[in-house]
Image 1 (cartoon, chains in turn blue, cyan):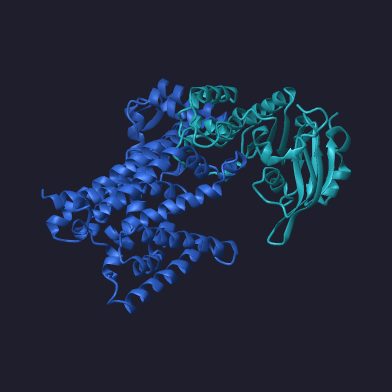
Image 2: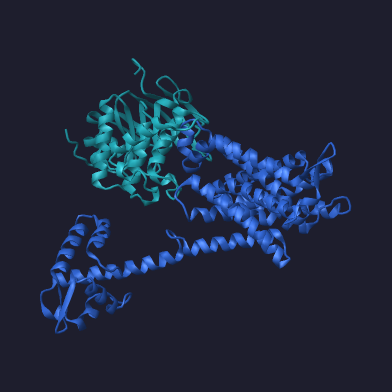
Length: 386
Length: 246
């Protein structure tokens, strides 16, 4: 690997982690789309800042642009509070207006501004190593590495100091207020950090893809854990994976780095969404199917227990007496037989002793409103599950 | 705790959402050590009253005093149990962690909870019968269990006044009994409890003080004296007949 390659991956990874941290809280606060609004609305701030400073990495430009981001949030909330439009509509009204001011500013001053619309939308990581920071003649590395590194450091320190407060105000705003932790301060603190981070990442990944870096790692981590700290760590991990895998994918395909990073994030999410052991779609599908079979089995056993008369227990009658539409009778019969809950003679089905015992206990739980205990009961009785 | 000061004194409180008054000129004195129900029809402003005592909602007129001082100065003396539906139970955290949030007020900014906070939180979980669920993710708890977690969280605040917004909503009979027993215990320890309550049948059995509310304050006092058909009719607008158990 060349130095430039290492630098690009390092910048990409730092950008991803810097986005993942506020992103986790935005996702939990159901404010993911606010990041979309901020990332677009900062454009006029960036252009104006560029007119003043003539340097895309100047701290003044970053603060000016971040201020535009916070103003966006204020405007969205102001419009929403009038009660005339919903929040998503307010977001959709505010950010295109601000973004288009930025677009007009760029196109009117195209000769003076080294910004083009492509770079604004998609960013360009590949050029990051060329713009270097020199201190008294010594090469200190790419400027954007310092910029995003500083932003990340500030986020980490703030997160470390105010983790408890952020968690509380995200989970229960009312309690945060009554305990004397102002949710308003925390809210705007988080919005400021998000805005500064988005401005810092803008250069590298652009206005559209920065949203993916904020939302996707957190959304993926959310599917995998029940613990906020672990969710933060996993978000960062997914960000880093996307940064490095995305870089090499872009390298092989000779394509946009930011685009590849986002594609990797999308694939990571899809993979977890399908295969997550606890909440994945496939697991849910199998669990639901199993439950359906087992509920039918229980209905079937209760039916057998209720009816001593033979015609009610005849194999051919089952279809009429119980609603088998959703589950095939054969599946249920086989499951019951495999677990030694029933035996069949002359096409008449009866409960075995074990089946009788199981049904009695299940019935007891159902009538005393403790249906959840049936799961434990199944664990004890069943050799095979549905 | 204070000699003659009422736990809560509300004077001329008016709250409005967008010019529509929700509470109108409320005067209310809640003495220390009562177990009080706030009753009234839907939209009467019961939750709003609690939220304005806590400063979550800003009134457009009037004052609230907690033991003679503004709420802001008495934050550590008041615990709040919000409606269960006010939070997102899919939040990635455990029952114990939610209870520990009750200790954050005493910790103040930046300081982290430690062993001491964990210990009192575990004790509170045991008290509400939820110790075995301490590591359970909160979305995996039943509605009644979630309500108990909220109660435990209020208990660790070790406050003088407890404000509860419909703690019996959607809980089964066992949990309701468990919660009311804890409330009665707290009252015996001299605490003041203010509960938004819906089930008029249980008012005389559970509470010793009651406030009738319907945008305006209708009546407030001991259950034995004022929980009668007259006040119920004034509050709910239809003829109410209840048998008040003596």
